[in-house]
Amino acid sequence: AFLYAKLYKVKFIWWEPGRTKKMGLIRKLLEPIFKLMLKRSNAYITYSTFAKNYLIKKYRIDENKIFVAQNTLVNEGKISPVTMGLLSKQYDLKDKLVITYIGAIEKRKKIEILFRSLHNFESKEYILFLIGDGKDIQYYKEVSNKHNLNCIYIGKKNIEDSNYYLALSDVTV
Image (cartoon, rainbow, N blue to C red; front, top):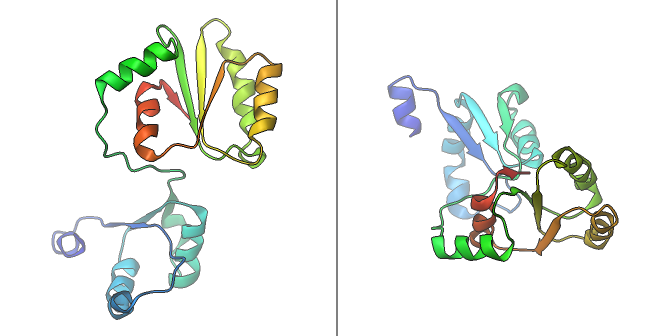
């Protein structure tokens, strides 16, 4: 892809997850090539601020060329219509606005802001699925119960199972 982009004068975007482990032998041998490709990329997309900082510190990449795509998921799974129908029926989703939050259930994620925004849907029935786990899950359960919010705590799910909730969603946070 890199050679094609350079031959045909097409922009090349580097996707960087960031490195946390030591490089293996093959990666060490190929590092000069990776470095050349990195330096000559037109823009960069990363999973996290950690990866952005990695590019800036290790390769001195201009931070204005780096875009952070927070909380990305790779969604390549097949969605079963039968399972979709069962979930829709189980949670009585007909005519409801379906909102899904996927992530850590922790105060640092400021889920209370999402809770406050639910008051804007007073005229429309909604359901909020919270997928994930964390040290503050009990706190958020108490807050949502206290304010009579229509929240369903799904717990930790793998990506394949999360895909069903994403597919049912009108809004994803």
